[in-house]
Length: 391
Image (cartoon, rainbow, N blue to C red):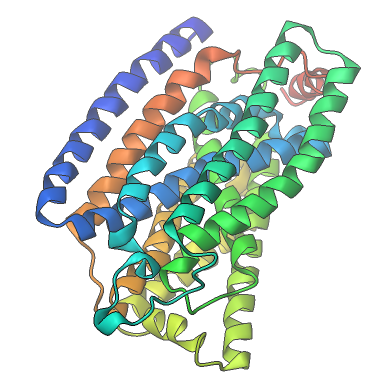
């Protein structure tokens, strides 16, 4: 398939994904009338998962500009298209604001005039909304500059432009880390406002990067079947990306275990219930499932050079991780609404899939906006020579 045929095929994808996503969203809107609390809880899972991919793309893009590694040049346009879904996710945050009283205990009236759990100075609706606006403004500025300077590079790069991208990424990663930490506290940790973890923000950031990288690898494997990627992407590129994916898998597991170990060692009454709700009944079995398939199996497979250099096995690992990241979102959110008695609802499945359809439609609409290969990046010459050398 030629490059023009591939771009034409990509151009047809947004309509298909948008139609499927809109149909599922409309079906769930019908459920909103009967069970608004369940709708908003399911919506939170969908929002956290898909905004995590968008933010993970921003983080990976800045890491690539800061380190100057060739490992991400093949997925750079994929990451940039992912960052440009941020306006869609900003719009998707509005229903989360509308359903605050159905989601967060600190915004709900308490019986017998008792005060709601949590810190009223920090956890109140007005400050919550103001912080959310601030987060999206910060992320929007980062995404805008990264994409604007990338378009300028496409028209003809310069050393000053590459220095700007590197400087932005250095400071931007600090800003990103702070805003994502507070956003993760607001959106998920505050579901159980008496529990806290100092590792939580870093754990969420690593999870975002892991999910975004798994999606980028899956898309690259699909693009690598045809031009222009077929003549440039080599098996060694996939090996590098697979090794980077392994790094994030190990880092996620390390942080998860560290958080559990600290909580277990502290043995504090405010911290233990969070894990008890997730270690009993069905959620305990799902936790073991995550250990096996979000860490054990991917870790074992990605140790093998042959898996990372072969497209189909690497695609299977990437897709497995995407599914497990959604399961992890269920495990993090749902036990807060009933502990071991919390159950999956059909909207828990349909809403993430529906939002995913809209996200993928927007993503594939943005993907062809720039050439799939950053031709004016100074490292592309080295990549091209490497491709020729390795056939």
